Length: 269
Image (spheres, rainbow, N blue to C red):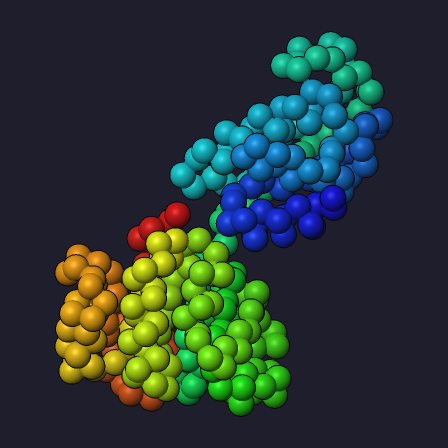
């Protein structure tokens, strides 16, 4: 498996890892500069030449995986028989610098409803390193021409057209996905709230709308859905920053995105 595929696998699994790269080589060494190794919690992919260099890099990478906020590190190795090594002698004769770069778990966000606000929100969030899921039951909201504004996205954008039951997408989303519910149909919003509360692997759940809308939803979730108060309180509404009161779609989108990013900062995991 290539290192690119290995990184993609970790991303899909929502697992952290470390990318190890031979940064510089002087003299003889097992691998040339640019050789890469990907280290996960229990697996590795690729090689930077084996021996002491690779073993030490893997040990240090695993230590980094257990750290709260790991930073990139550069480790220098002298490859000669005069150096006391932790994992045996490498006497190639050269020197090697190895760069270790932490690969953090990529967050996932799902926007249910890609109308005026949903699209503006997607534009803002697409500038972040996210897995961004866009879900709508209206095909005209998901046309290539309409979503062309996301063509330069940093995020990995996943489009889901769900003509019948948008809530079925919830089970397919990655663990910890943050849910934002803002469809064109209050009945659909209510069904999504109920389904999201029943889906145990999700992150936060946000609902756009007024206080009156939430009063109706809360009663329905309790009486028809059978959810207790603590479970219902998982849903945050209104979403966005309270001191930003503008009603233009772009303003709402910035407010909601800022609130979500603040949640990310307060919960690094």
